[in-house]
Image 1: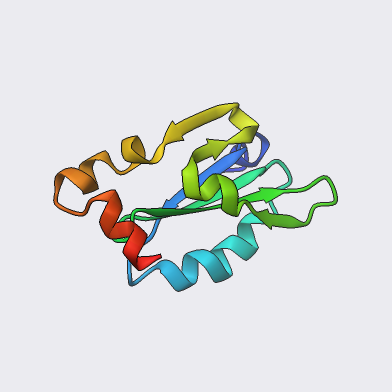
Image 2: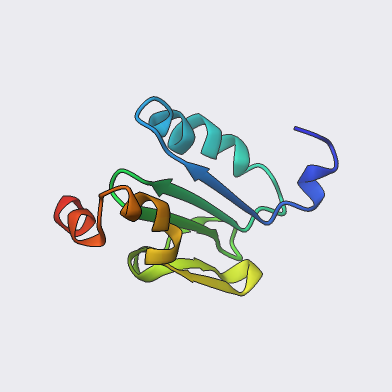
Length: 105
């Protein structure tokens, strides 16, 4: 990691694949939690059209924001919200619709 990146990273978004999902949620997330300025860590699962949004609390604990994850990509630290159909626009266009995602979650 570049030494200056730690001072500016507020959000990291990872797009999961079958081969990286366990690493991204395990060892990689453990390393990212050590970045003082990181406020949100988002895991995107395109095959399920779903998100997991983790937020750092003032206590430095991490919270899985399940309500936000179910309705939109909500990045509180950036004051940004993107509807799920926009996040997964290319996936949906390729044939996996939001209804498909609802049956797999």
